[in-house]
Length: 349
Image (cartoon, rainbow, N blue to C red; front, side, top):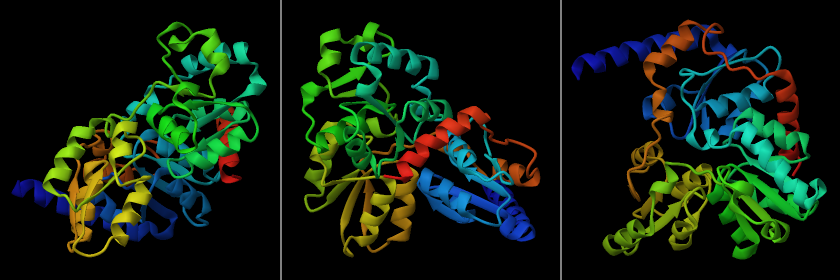
């Protein structure tokens, strides 16, 4: 362990020296779910889209290192200026949820639904946690990207233009948002790409208002109502806050629900001596507990993202020592153009 600590200290020193040498030409972005030592070395931390916007607005940065998963770096590459290069420390840091929405299967599902309803009846909406091809699909069909912060606004925008929504790829965020807007359970269909017509009938497709792609986040679906019951038994005065990628059963039994940024603000604004139980990725919870020692901050369940954890000091240093040469994230121009339309539609909400 001592040898590891020495190695880490040496890597941190080297990273700091490279940052000093490159100055404002370098921008290191760190997602909230990154381990503490990575966040401490970053220039900005936050949710994926906010970080991508921050990079695109930067007038000096030429090298953007995105410490997060691949779809986040892709989003940064879509928004980046021509003279900016986006890199990721580990190209294999993917996202299970994003991988659940394969572009070929999405295209097939879209065609099947619109052949029944007519294309002008359905608005595609895609969660930020998706690859560039799915964002481009939405852009081509007039749809928009959304985040967990503005999903309700995106749904309202979509219903203002068309009578139905096809939401990719997170079933749970889609359901929680639909319920929040008063959509009835019987008006919501889950689309399972492995079944004919997604496991639905033609009649049900005609009647539905919301189609939800059968996808989920493995981190947030590890939480369940029994865990909430146990925590309420042991900490009756605690407030429980969860992410909207959790199941609706968990969301209904919590005290508050919101995006990662919402959770960070919720903790910051809570009174001293509060007990807060959080249902999201464990690295963020651990860091919040350190940042707010005057509050008792506990995980609803110890759930961590191994893909986020693939980013470490060793591969961050490798990326910086080979700045602009390795692990470059690019998006094909035609895909980039269509995906940008969907992102722009979100920004215009």
